[in-house]
Image (spheres, rainbow, N blue to C red):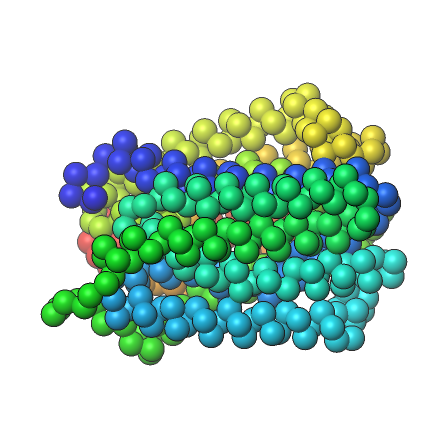
Amino acid sequence: MTKSLTQRHVLRLWLPLAAMWLLMSLEQPTLSAVIARLPEPTLNLAAYGLTFSIALIVESPVIMFLTLATALARSQQAYGMLMRFTHLMAWGLTAFHLLLGLSPLYAWILGELVGAPAEVIEPSRIAFLLMTPWTGAIAYRRMWQGVMIRYGRTQFLFLTTAIRLLATGAVAMAGLASGALPGASVAGLAISVGVIADAAAAGVLVRPVVHQHLSSQQPGDFILQWPYLLRFYIPLAMTSLINLAAQPIVSLGLSRGPLPLESLAVWPVVSGLTFLLRSGGVALQEVAVALLADRESYQILRRFARSLALALTGVAALVTLTPLANLWFTGVTDLPTDLAGMARTAAAILVLVPALTVLTSWQRGVLVHFSRTGAITVATAINITVLLAVVLGGVRVLPWPGVATAALALSASLIAEVVYLTSRARGARRAAAWT
């Protein structure tokens, strides 16, 4: 793939991945729209936002399984070791999720640590327990999808994600029609069913790929040992953990700033739209990991990244800085008028986030190629430090609702991360004489 790499080849690999992330990004706006149409929408939107934040932290150690499999599933022996690692992480984290949801620690985290309003804690706990299969299913699905990416079967990723979205949507619509469960519980149940369906589909579709490429071990094939696996993976896992700590940090700021309940309700809707707009940028990391091989491929991929950043900036400006924003927040997600105004302001502040996501993914892909995964962890720590400083400082001194401060903090933290990643990636290229 890299010997005759062109912009068309990059686009061909990127498109199915971008479509996958685009479909995934539709999940949260869909669930927010369903919650907004059920009783007590503000309470349940806030509860589900907190639930999803905690669930993401539990899931964080397996987020980078996609990158891990793309980079290391090079032989039958390596794939077998990766699957043993997947079993261990999936079932261990599922047990932790369940214990956390059933223990008093959950209420303490939300009530004392985050400072969430008392009335959202139990609705959030119920939704969290309904999401118990979440982490395990994501672990298997991301491992198998990484194998598909490595061997050029990216069209399968779109199919598995479409199945997930259909399953999630079906459960959400059934919950909306019946009205038997609170909105946060409907969302928790729907997302669990969706990821289970996604993992099952990935498990079926990966079989012919494994049979063709990973069914036998040949002399000279890559041998993966536990020390190398852990050295490669632990920085990536720490990156995910630190990065997803942003969710409760934002919730902490929202809870302690002006209009806390309203800000907690609006943030999942705003972040859902932002994820939709940045989804194409997220897809670039695995493209870089799969295709980057030498100086020539670097130049081609860099041109693609720059073009993508400009394109996504234009789309984001069109959606967030024009009347389309009002159409989204009042028509699609059905927010009340006062909440829709808060959402429009926050979305406008986040207009550069899609382009920053492209740059982050691109530089991370370069660092993974050079096995500099520790630099990615440091960059993420810088991101979280800036986020924490701006959120907690801003909600105390800025007069506007906390959701606007959170949007400002997210933008600032991504800028800081991009600056550091660019510096470290430049150093890695110089060491390889690519400059």
